[in-house]
Image 1 (spheres, rainbow, N blue to C red):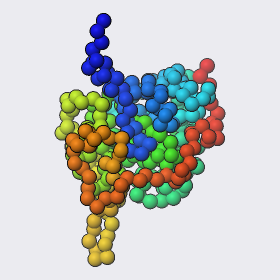
Image 2: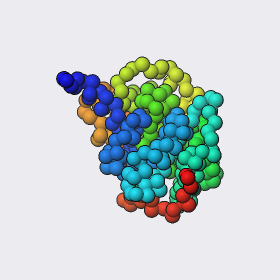
Image 3: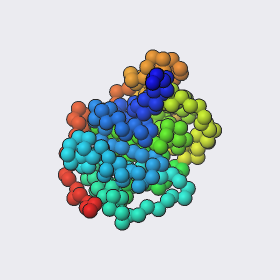
Image 4: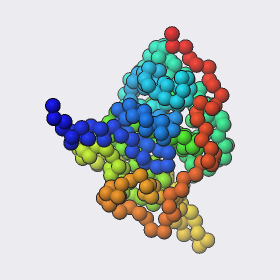
Length: 302
């Protein structure tokens, strides 16, 4: 049998992780099979977009992710998922697999936020939402839409990034428009001077799947993304001594050295007078695996 090299490479590449920012990666659901990349990048936080809770719970309790870092690997990672369906499907909280998934991860989220520097919640530069959204978590399944979706998604991402560990954002496929819109919001928050169209082109240049069959207008006119974009610009505004407002440019996402020269050549999005990306973490230099937190009592699944 002759190997179809092009088909093989397309299938292989579609499952690779792509780096969006320091310690932040994205991919499709099958990318969770790339255990070597997950471990190499010390990915301890996984954010599913429009992945059914039943699927997330199976991944958490019955996949190779359980033993990724240790034999007690279920406590080495934190998983959350965002369900953006206008009519969310209910899930059976009495199912032992789902119960384990929700209880363990909700407990770990509360342990994590309890250890954060309180100052992270005292400025709208980092966390935009109300502190109570992140300090009294009952479910790790967030059924949100519109502005609330973008706000809480990015806030949780900032909280996870602050630990210094890797984060993976994944959708059912790379052309999920909500998934792409959320990635765009990450880019704009990092580089607040960019327009939505520019951020979309950047995300598009990174995607493994070159399929252009995406309803771009549905992304550009996503009401939640537009509202979040305005909030980012408002929170990034600084006032000069003469009372003239201007945007405070953060570190650029487009200095990401993981982007190949060919992909960088596709678009020219380097704003002038912008400092190279140098993400920092409150833990500065320390990488604390999630498993180092005080263990939550593991939910029974028998």
